[in-house]
Image (cartoon, rainbow, N blue to C red; front, top):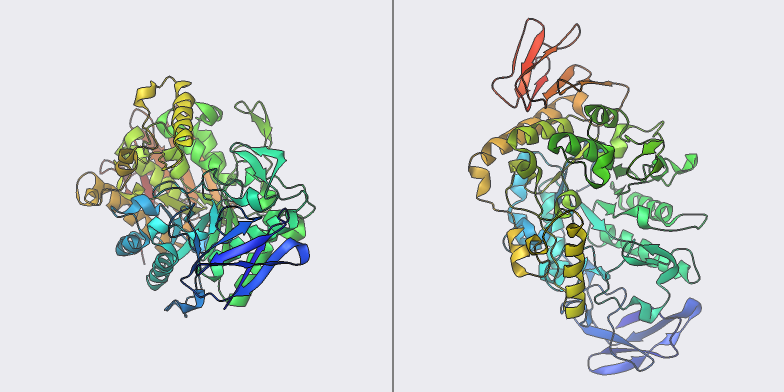
Length: 579
């Protein structure tokens, strides 16, 4: 027997179809309809509202036939977990690796990803961040247009496949962060409006109507989202959440839904006896996201540092389009290293106004630092990675600055060997009109930057997805093997050098010479010196700095007589010798 429940305030009659028969549900408190019916895990079912067509369950645990098919019951207690001793780890000590299941391996499944976990362990990664895996249209996509938020994607391997991947990660000592999207849902297969006021026209997002977090009926919607957040950690043993684009979540309630999520996750973590993280993506430069609730914040664990990325990317590539117009000086990189936000109340030319506020009182481990991620690569017209835009030398400089920064570092799949495969935007919408709209919209977007429409890859084309898959033969070939060795050495140095861990800004000094193109960062007994200028540069070391090179991206980096000589596009790390 199984108890079916569904919130449907607009319906006058609700039935559940299971095992070839329809059964009426009874309206209860808060317009939640319920009935206990003869059904068991593995049974397919669907709801009918007022005699209408079959609809998937808003809380469907499995959609084996995709977003338009029936739901399927799952017994989460039946999975044979082997991670009983897993207790998680502090976020401040983590190194995250952003992974898209559908392109990480040729097969693009949870099961196939397990085979590559030893590579991540050998690299020095401690946590895997999965791009959204909630059920989305078709068999391929980024996952940010998901519609069945409780159901792991069927083409990746469904609930059992995800559990096997998480269990294997824990066996390898890797935490798992789930990327979740609560600022919008995709249009294809989105049946939530049939059930109730999940969305509102009182607010708008770049993707359409906003989720109803503060209007009539929002109590149930908030409960839906909070329950989803904790479900990934409880039923799938996830170790954390990455909340997508929280700046697009509009909530005027006295208690913001982000705070509600953080409180619920904290309570669950205490109950489970293990560490669980909540990490936000936001471009607001608002420290309230991660400030303690006692100090008026939402109490999230960390947020992405977009300014650090933008500052570093603009310096290394010379790009000044869009939001990169606000960056381009080495001084911006130095500022980001010192306080995460370059824009902490100063005027942004791109925005035409002042932006951000200082993160006073926060440690650097409340921020994630990176120079590549799915957005910054995939939202480009042709999905170029940094290695393709700036060359191997500058990618090595970027890696050194990210992996010696005081932030929690995040890498994007394939970055560690300078992958030449692009990461393109791809979709698999079954609705021809929607597919055409996505294709034409992307071409119009990049036409504004001078791109010819025929040069923009078609998101719906199978080839676009296939080109985005990692080539696992690359790491053994030059120059990829050299880049991979560099990342491994940097992560080993970070792990073995306490001063390089995420933490305090008061132990960091950063100075630059714009004309020479040099940046020098001191982190306690460690000095990181980079030259992104066009000519060789000499950096005086001065008293108190180490005089021995521990790692150098170029053999022409030399150190003697109190000075460091750096060829163009190189970086050297100086530290006292190992004892």
